Length: 366
Image (cartoon, rainbow, N blue to C red; front, side, top):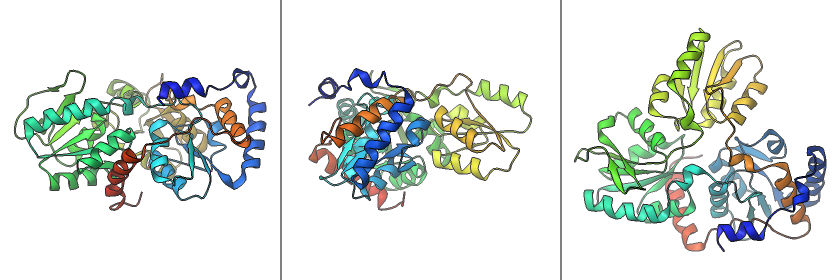
């Protein structure tokens, strides 16, 4: 069944959208209580507060998938986006059902690396460079891309361990292909001492390189990006620095190279959270990451001044597809014995994707 067919088949009844939040919260809690230990609810850091309030665990995508696999729950209602639920399905047992409350909750970055484009690119890249390339993919990618990397000897990476994984890849092969986020790949490789001149971008739409191809290329960056993190700018950072003398800026490495270079610090979502938590009272911070998380940090750490690095930033639109209406609908369907919006990765793809994940997990405790 295609994703479009699934959306058509399992559309939430319209009356859920007409309910007020209080009614939805009451009904969701009643359904959750009835499901008991059969239900596990992971909630990604970027989710709305009203969804996080129901989460049994909150965190990054891979962490939540691992926690899902560690439970004995029958149902995993994953409050995140499609690729995250896929990873949870790959790591959990066949008996466990992974559910995404709204099938429209995708990820523009993950969608920028289509498997057909990737396979065509691999042919052209190996024609150009021979058997000298190892593919790595950010976990923010589809199961098919993870499987591609597993099939070709590569692995997955997170924003926390990308540096170590890139180092290891370049010990095994002369070059690497980094999917699907060019910014994480560029920022991490640069921090390892690889000059920008030894990196080149592959445009999967035009099926060509952006820049001069030469034998010293070490890192081939897929032309993909996060639509949220790419919106932060150096210009606004400089404006804030002019307004707040003691401002400290921390950004996610999915931001552009220019923004990361201009910031005081950069790091994974966990590093951002830990940095703010341990910062002295009275300090002032501008954070370059998703707005729901920035606002939650500001509300939690009221002894510090915390603001977004983009004054017009909206929450991640696809992540925000998971609302109380869809969440409540999914739980009430489960109470009635109906599984809607199940995410199921086919066995052959899951095996190869698990290989890519295992190559990373065997080295790092995430």
